[in-house]
Image (cartoon, rainbow, N blue to C red; front, top):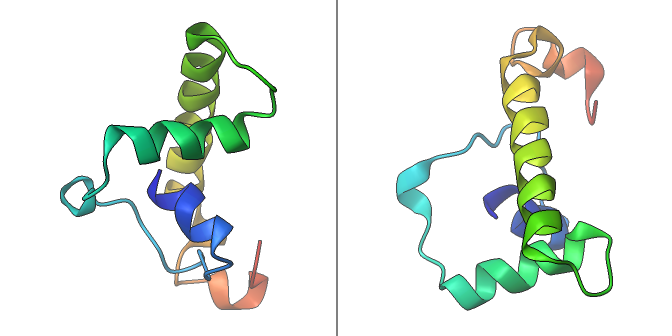
Length: 79
C-alpha cells in the first residue's frame, strides 16, 4: 500500500523503503488502492492475493538491488 499510494500521488519512490510501522491506513483504503492497481475490473480474493504477493516479491528485489541503491542509484534515476 505504501508504494502504491505514493506512486498514485506521483511521489518520488527512488529513496523510499517500506516501513511496517508507518501503516496508518484503514482496511477499506488499502483494499481500494489494491483493487485500483490490480488490473482487473472486479478481482477475486485470489487475484488480489496473487497481485500482492507478486508486487511484494518485486519490491523486495528492487530494494535489495544495487541498481536501486543510493550507491549507484543516482546514475539510474527512475530505474
